[in-house]
Image (cartoon, rainbow, N blue to C red; front, side, top):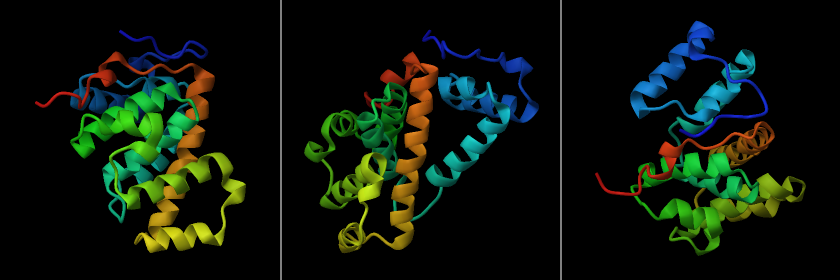
Amino acid sequence: MTQTAQRFPTPAIDQLPEDIRGRLLAVQEKSGFVPNVFLTLAYRPDEFRAFFAYHDALMDKNGGLTKAEREMIVVATSGANQCQYCVIAHGAILRIRAKNPLIADQIAVNYRKADITPRQRAMLDFAMKVSLEAGRISEQDFVELAGHGFSNDDIWDIAAIAAFFALSNRMANVTAMRPNDEFYMLGRLPK
């Protein structure tokens, strides 16, 4: 079993507030394990709640971006931010949502060479700029994205996902969060 964060204590599930314990047990029932991000962030319950409320608002909504495209943003920007946890965990989710066992590795290594559409490449170009060079965002970025059919709400979502996961990447690195072993094989082989 993969170790959880080394730098901060991981609370015992039975010692957590009821709402957080319930969420962890629901995730465990659905996936067969508790992802280390839940255990690590449970160290600070109020921040856990805020983090996952924003995560869910960004990642579980319907809109102009598919759920797989949302995961593409996470994998590409997390690779650039050297976040092992998010590349591995969200790579697994991307493989499942895209129904493609190759896409997460391609995007994590170099999304510009991945088997994605020009629209998705433009989306990831913008997400990377938000993640690494937000001070250089210009009106031209919006023009280019609109040319690929992205609405203002889509552009907001791309930016918000990249920005939110920049926070997540940094916290994962600070806490020494490791991906669960279970993530590595998810979505790689047909069922």
